[in-house]
Image (cartoon, rainbow, N blue to C red; front, side, top):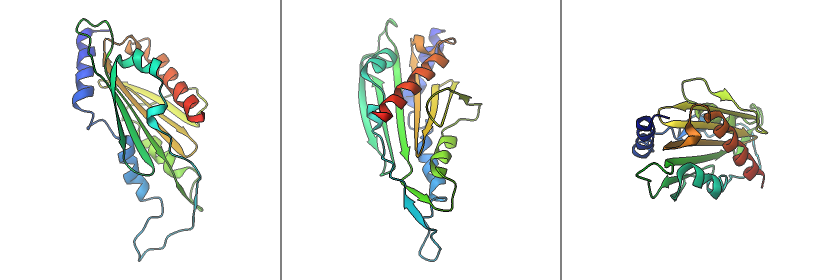
Length: 202
């Protein structure tokens, strides 16, 4: 991997974490228009509780994986609402000589709590899954999820995963990371998705 490209990815990841598509923030804007939440003068279609629980995004990636991807890190938990939450880990002790990765890993979760009876099943979760994807093609992953895909750009690796009413997004960018090497990216995406899904079921 070109060291300058890696450093650029890490810097972009740190300086633009607010600009990284909070896929969930975007999806929630879309979902609001589809979930039957209308003003008092509008008809609200019959809905039911999905029974799905919002997972803790700080618990879907394990310490061993975090150490391998970002090295020693600081965790920040962000809770945006009843249906969505976000967690991020940022390298706390960047290695000046490139002996360990230095960057950022973000995990966000969205769970659809309500379902319109007459609407497509998992509709809002599917909207969140689509909203998480960037403009370029999202390559499908073979997993136990209902839908999962990965993408790669100048900011790093991006995953979108949907299991029933829950959508998880992962963004990872780092310098000096073998996991982001050209021939390692798909493997990294597959391993991250598998770990997320295993911990969702735990």
